[in-house]
Image (cartoon, rainbow, N blue to C red; front, side, top):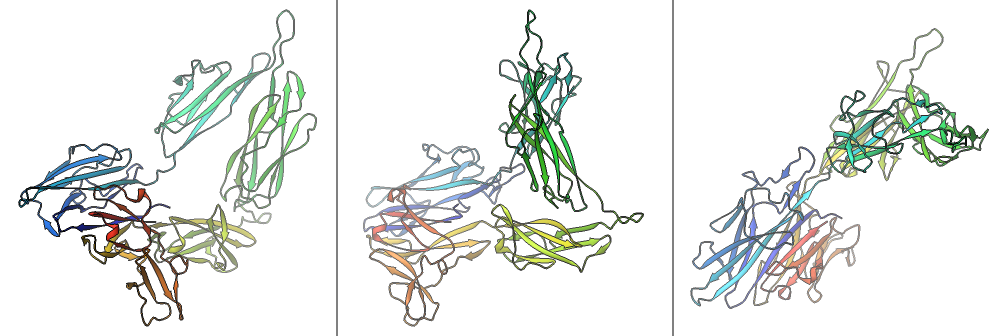
Length: 610
């Protein structure tokens, strides 16, 4: 799971001899969010006056704070990108009075998205003239939001067929490029040296930057009777490729001998149209399209693979050969919408493996027709059905609820009776019926929508089903974590103990709050049923969440009913910022116990929340 927030607390162990300790505070969060989509922003923006990180060293000499202008104090700043080497500061990283200010978005362009600033502190004790040294660091991370999906694909025929006298069909093939979240740059072909080359600009193509490209067999793009074409886009990683072939019948050989016979396969019907009613539903029907093949002038039986590309409600089955032709039976289920209530279209791909290897395409379309009345009577009123959200379609932090309302009209008259309703929610790859949701409206709780949620309503009126869909969005604020220490942030001579509590905030309000304010070795004396407390075991050390069930205290630390909603994992870093415990977790839980054995001069405890 992704980390939603990180908090830290530094505890210093001061000895009787003078020791120097330092940690860095910053006025900005240590995580910067980058939206990489066009028009995206960076939050916080380090170029803005209110967004510039100002990093201030906080220095202690034993238990006494040391001013940044104290005599004998020097601070040297360094920077480090990811796991790279430390280097001096660069432009827009300025130090004034030992305080570092960053005035540009320095994380942008850093491959690891991690940037660390280090403060090397030296202090010459005027009493002993000895120099004490310390170093502290602060690491910033840049998190990128998701990039919108980018697609490009090409549609169109792929074969020019020549007969024995040189005639060719079709005379021209028109390819169409379709794109999503990118723009078309140009069409290209692969030449005889396998180098991509711009498609020739001829009278057949005014330019090669438009979605449509006209291809003729005379164009100089074919290599050995095949042309490999592609469309390039504004994203160099997004393109699509298609191949076009010239297929010819056999021709006479030399010295009167017969030449080799060419093979060809084709469809008896490449375009099929289905009629839908006003709701986009098709009456159950079947259509047949035959796969025909010839080798030379001899009709042969083709081998056909599995047909693909069928929408919901359509099936295709290949039958046994009849007169060497393979019949493809296209079956439409009763009342199928073939992918949607509106007018739809698509392409079925028919793979042929013998006598030639190729893919044939069946183009299908659905045309919706209006309902008609009795003979001589006017047509029936159109039924209009839709879903809308009168209070908006956006939740904030999954809070509250939103009303989904349906609107239905028979002609110009609102439908208020005689209709039934079924509501569904899209999850796990399918539409699932919402139990008990049979009214014309539906109330959706914010807790039911994680990111986005799609809802569908099916209204049945006069024995006809009408469907509409709406999508709700949840805008969740970023979390922030803060670590509190009940025992302060200073131990002395390895003596001291503290309970560290990770508090989680969202939109200014604390979430996943503590179950109790009691953190103790001993249990409360007079608990009520349902009371909680955090039990401290110093010998382990460990902290358990306990609940009084009316007769006894029960450990509910991992009980799904009572435990904390989020997961809290703790790590440690030493005085130089290096990971302790081999980089493994130090402890887990919203509240943890630490003592002098866990702190060596200065130890930072970091809590990651998921």
